Length: 634
Image 1: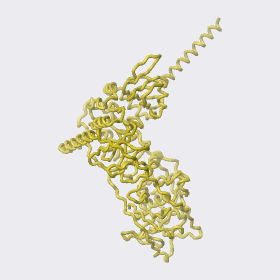
Image 2 (image 1 turned 45 degrees about the vertical axis):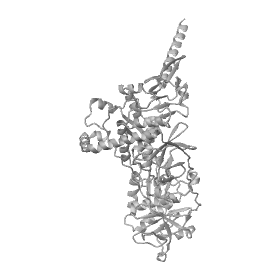
Image 3 (image 1 turned 30 degrees about the vertical axis):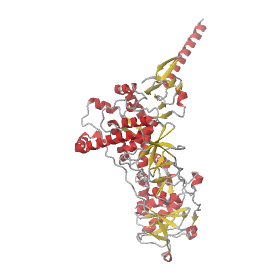
């Protein structure tokens, strides 16, 4: 009898443990709906019920997404955001695996942001009545807030700055923006025309030139004086023009005094998002999100009017300030807006495309929207010829796709006042959260004391790896000037330059350049791009310092950057068919091969790929080749 009771007790305990384990697993897998558009339903034991704000679902919950509907789930246990928008019925787990839906990891800060939103009664009310049938139904009365960061920390400065605003100018500009956006939205409803896509411009295939090595017995630090008049003719290209970034006069919509209700609202509208490993924050309320349903001209126009309101003005101001704070060039700024829109609206959605395009347009840039099979695409205008990207010609100007699309597009021809083309020149590298690589030691074989350790930011490397290669005008060699004129990252400069300056201190210009030249010649292993990357790919200076191999163009770009920064000597790139070298202007022209530019300045040849060669020496293979001088910024 005791044995039977003991067995029953043991079974009861095991059953309780299994029940507890099942409960814990269910709790761990529980997801919460925090954004619902349209009549999304869930099914349990044959009965249906609506999915609403705060509905708890699991991966096995069966739901139905109607046409134009959407549900976003927060999976706190796994730090995930799940966006389900493709029409259809199935389990959450099955729908999440569809290519048309999105699942991505979120930060703890974003998780806290969403939980705050879900506890905000005003947000819950807005979300409860969200509907894909219109994009203008949600309230436009959300009060605005103080800017985060230093602006909020110094209220006195903000008040004084605010008082200095000219009321007349402010009203005039706000009236201009309202009228411009209203006119633009009206144009969007009708100004669509089909355009054929032009094939991408491909990089030219250069003849292969093998690196050459000066035998150790023939190495010299300077050439004899009888080489002093070895001058050669070369074609010189015009210098590249730098176009300043657009500076739209968008003013922050901020109250001088903040009520308790406004302060509470501000706490719920600090939207965090990630951009190349860097967490950024803008004022953006989840309750103001839209759902197009389909990218028809009328829906796009309605959404544009929805965006052209005070809360989105605050968002625009925040984006422009992030552009300045993080030193974002035009391309980096566009990518930041795309990252923001994707994390707010869902990656790859029409809503994300439209929001990013709206912000880029309102920041002063020239954009157009295209449609194909009901999907929206963003195009940007540029005077740069971008390699490998399809483009459309509209009013004799090139507009580039941001993602590959086959065939023609129906493109909205609507233009916005004072719009400006995107430039691919990088005047400053973006300031990104530092995630240093494993580091490397670079040393000169001829000058043993010229040894430097360097670690490069992986976030910056990811940004540079995705940067589009382009040229300006009709000469493709200008693509190298873009790389060579890009300044070295400040953190990398702080690692490299003190050591190099110490080693070069007290040397003549010629001796210092010779040491830098040998450091670049012998500190990096040579390999062709097609063997390493599968095709031609020039490096920015940081990339050469990080990756194990570098070819002639990478070495010339890094060398000219170092000479200009450390010795303040003007440089040019020297292009031969299949080969890129450099030349330096000295106060007193040394012996060796030199070229004279149109301004009468002598530039003495320095070849970072002619291993162990000193200043003035030319590769034997290049002696009868015509050279082109590519001017660089000082």
